[in-house]
Image (cartoon, rainbow, N blue to C red; front, side):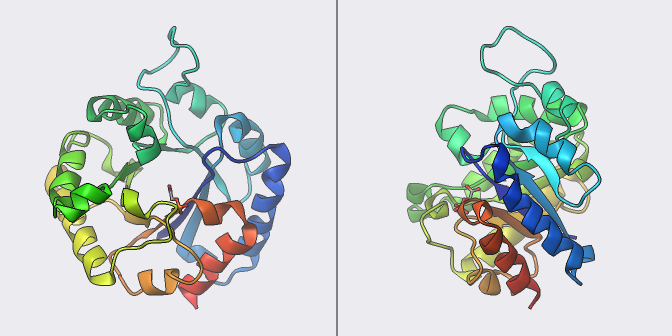
Length: 247
Ligand code: PGA
């Protein structure tokens, strides 16, 4: 199964659902649709209405983040996994670099993953190195640490997906070379296999994915799908990614 996950970030109002309606119509007609799953993470404000709208349809709604506590608490502006699940989300991103930059630590992320899974949300755990770490050839060390400080073998592996997103690639149009990316994904899968003492969960790539570079990425068989930011805000761009992946 491949995954095409759209991360809307701070984008979207109720009528933006038209974008997803178009993607849903495409999916229903696509002869390849059994091979992949489409998940979109709109902002918190839209999760409930979009989840209801797509309840018996093909697009799955997720959250972009969740708080590191379980249920209710006195944390202003926080939204817990329990609350997110209660309005129909099925997935949540955890550890996106936007949130790490704003202060999410590995310790916080460990709690987020734990409570998300406890509340039956599937987790898309994001990891990635920054430009300086890449220049200093620290990529693999950084990724190993990000995984080992957050994931462990007692977690429900089947409800976890890992998304590799090099920070220097997000929103910049820059992508890793195929050789580099293949090596990195293989490394991540090896670390995950050791962590879970069984087969690695799915590993996605994210960072400036578009309808043309997806033709390069599809040659790397280890990549199980994509986390798509900018291009997920346009139905045409998002559909082009899927079309060109299977062309
Ligand atoms: P991008 O964002 O596709 O716009 O680079 C990816 C992400 O941040 O998840």
